[in-house]
Image (tube, rainbow, N blue to C red; front, side, top):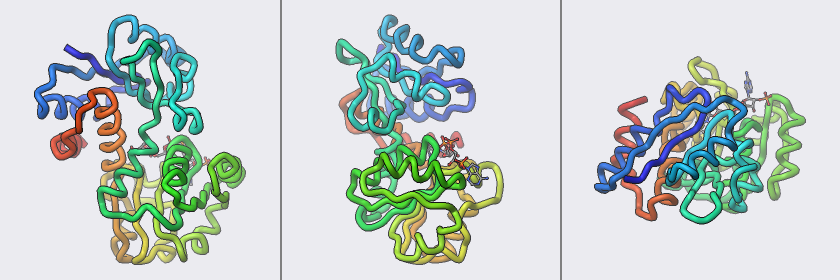
Length: 265
Ligand code: NAP
């Protein structure tokens, strides 16, 4: 039996075990997915322990995404982002990947969104960083807006072709934009939005990384403006799908994984 897992602290709320195990069941794979909660400063040690125990693959979440860089050979995208959310133990040295970036890109393309033109990323934390690199690698021109404007400029300095802005510029930034991704935590467990409703329009595709609730105020406002909407569970799904495919080499059963993910939300 292959064992996969997740390290995070806390991990009690994680949706990854049922989502991945739905994929193993659908494909008839003899595998399990287990959530581990190492102490907050033991991320790299946990990766080494997992390798010793013969674990096949690990997802990595808060607070370990940077720390585990010390225990893996990072893939180029994970190295540029500076964070790892997936470790693959199939080679001699564990390799570190970042599937959050690809998860956002695949969530958009799954909904028929063209990956060209201009994207506005709101937020410059961990999700904003991964999504900005992911979209820039798809040849989108990326505008990053953040409450703390200096962080938007610092991130834009790292992302090819990107520019940094304050939230007060969102109206102008969105006027001719094609894609908007909310990567702030605004709207999580609250009916708030980081983007004024009157800045949204029908030519936008809007992805909200927030997935609790599944229909955020931003997505409601976007739908009312005639925009294409993509909820945060799609991003969560495709970061998992990408890890599943990397580990197993099989095409992930997206529909089965999506059904179980949404049933557990
Ligand atoms: P993070 O690193 O802590 O970054 C938080 C971001 O939110 C920062 O840009 C912060 O701005 C901004 N922010 C927080 N409160 C704000 C407020 N009241 N007004 C305006 N901006 C505010 O968090 P993260 O890891 O990037 O996660 C961000 C969100 O994405 C969370 O809701 C998380 O659950 C979600 N997420 C979803 C997925 C998925 O697969 N769907 C994956 C990763 C993350 P400052 O810099 O000014 O503080």
